[in-house]
Amino acid sequence: MPPVAIRQEGRKIWHVALPRSKFAFLTLPRYSMIALSTAVEPLRMANKLTGESVYDWSIVSLDGQPTPASNGLQLAPTVPLEQVGPVDILFVCGGVEVQEAVSPKILTALRRLAERRVPLGALCTGGYALAKAGLLDKYRATIHWENLSALREEFPRIHLSDQLFTIDRDRFTCSGGVAPLDLMLHLVESKLGARVSQLISEQFIVDRVRNDRDRQYVPLRAQIGVSHESLIKVAQLMEENIEKPLSLDEIASATGLSRRQIERLFKRHLNCVPKRYYLQMRLRRARELLLQTSMPIIDITTACGFQSPPHFSRCYRAQFGCPPSTERQTRQGKPGALARPPGETAEAGPARLLP
Image 1 (cartoon, one colour):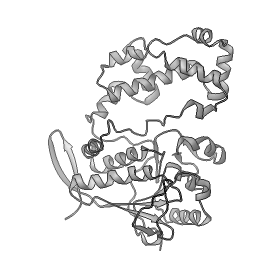
Image 2 (cartoon, one colour):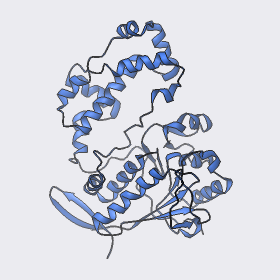
Image 3 (cartoon, helix red, strand yellow):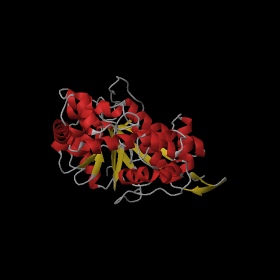
Image 4 (spheres, helix red, strand yellow):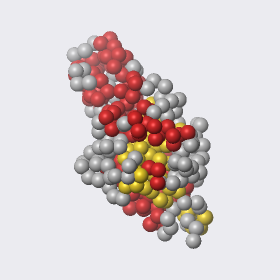
């Protein structure tokens, strides 16, 4: 019996034959177990919900020996890379001390895969391996926030962002933690429809499915270091006053800094003006309320310090690309198809790993 996709229109469900997809996960030494687990489990659940083997997956190492994760555990079965066969995407799974984990043999293998046009992805710090192999040059990509600054310095030809995940042509990169769950739900939705993606998230007690417009939360201390307590104090004061935003003069008075000092701190360390940083903070809070609660938009407008719903809508559209009402409707599953980011193409068909 062929694999089946479940799609929903209103309350009507029908079946559409689909080809089986296969993913491989190449485990680097001390890879992140949580990142790999949250990538594999949505595939398993998709098979369960559809009643068909819509997805196959393999855990891979160069020699077929199980690779110790950062928590000391190993996964079996693990198969040699050359025995995997055709796959739709191969993901490189990274974790701690990734620079030491990326060997010349790994780089050679990845370059050979790219030569054969195998779509490549990365979980957590696995993007470092692709970057080191030169396989992310001129691509949009993301990586765990702890590694963003270092990668920007070492690989300036990569268009790095702090998104949860990034899909650019035949590259699928993702930050760490549970963000691979969001990437996989996105891939499931593009193949099987929003209803299956939503059912998977319900099974995993996920409040909402995040997309590639969602950003990693990068702690301010990680962005600027622990030595800039004045800037951290200003940001904390802003966060404590979301509903009734403070003026720059009020912030200066409360922190004992001058307006000029605050502006210089933000420009030097965050490359933005204080007003812009404050606005982005309020918009992030508004988006959390919009997607995680049933609060009316007018109440969110007030709670996040905006003058009126039209003012809120304009600011929200400028930041996230759509008005608040559309964002909420999309997350509730009302519109149909997924929009593709500019330059993104449909998933490539299976490609053979090695001759």
